[in-house]
Length: 113
Length: 117
Image (tube, rainbow over all chains, first blue to last red; front, top):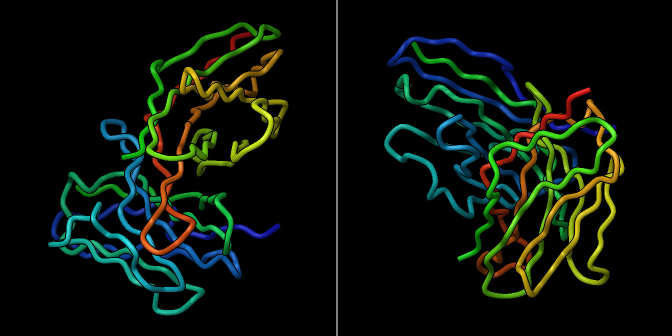
């Protein structure tokens, strides 16, 4: 049963520190999405890639956030420097070519003190 | 722009009773609609989708959804609720992105379903 993997599952850090979250997509799933979920804002799309190329990152604060896909098996989301308002659960989701269904990872719960 | 609205933040229903979670949509073209469920401390899971065809779509765990074009609605239903159905439910609509037939999903804010014994 193929699954999306995210690491770490939990991260507690101090304000100003760099945070890197990783996602291993399901093999063959060529579209990768990064979402952020908070009680106040709900589920927000931060960025997404297709075939490793960024398609849209307009939902992401550019001054501190960056998203990359170094290869087809790894997507990363970095925050530098982190701030308390970045505290949220960050989800990676994938979809296969020519399909609509997105498969979500278990999320990374980030707490910035 | 595409959008969905889930008018109820919370729905409470007794076990064994039918449940409905409401969703209305706004699209510029043909609507492609989805329902996802999120259990505590988990990622979202796909339940069902409407692309074309029958207005009644059947999905996982006994859920179904009815597409109503005239009312621009896509309500999620289940004939007999279980306590284990308690979760956060998201409606979503698909958008078309540049140069491709597949795009991002626009999610609603979610509806918390609580089924009490």
